[in-house]
Image 1 (spheres, rainbow, N blue to C red):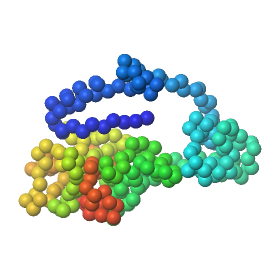
Image 2: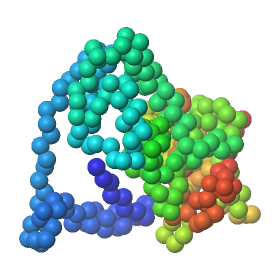
Image 3: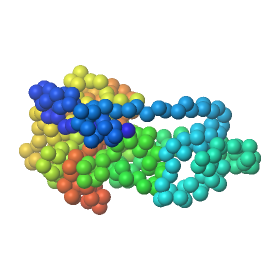
Image 4: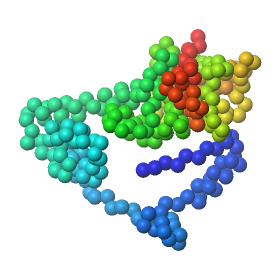
Length: 294
């Protein structure tokens, strides 16, 4: 699986048209055809073998054992392979729960039942937390950090390296209370808190509802950032972003619409950040808290 991202100028229909024209030129070519330009655009769709559908408390482990031979662990995962073996999972062999002790079977069943709730928590609070309640999501080079790897697989597979982008998320205002569409919020950046980026870099704040989808709104604005047309800075160079359901009178250009009620989440992304905005030791300066407005 792979993804292609292309930046467009917000609100610029001509720029979108250019990108659409560029997309029409993309092709996918199997490596065996790469040497022959006449074959470019030709790809073979691999045959996916039929999988057995298991049921019961240990179905996850049976499926895991079936899938491992198709994508075997590399040498760096030897410790994990040894741990799996203790639970009766060996590469190239079907999982046989009957060969395990009753205590081991019970433990595996309990783990399979608890794991979804644990991962739901991890997805919500993954990454490095900062006092302002923003979580700095880990870059995509997970290595042997299986906990973060699993959270990344659930929340979003394609996470940039720090040189390309920094990702942050939060479900909470600065006072550690869950963000709710019934309330009004403000995100204030002092002039020196606005994240610096390299040439062609930018930053944005994106709104997601409780269903993890973009929030529909009357102005079709799903994110706001330094590329938002008409964004207004204060006289001292600071910036206020208004996060609420109703338009803020006189501040509509700086408005990020929220749902009318219910919990929501914000994702904050800095693309091509300067060194100070990608160093975990200094980037906290660019993560001001979200403040509830009474």
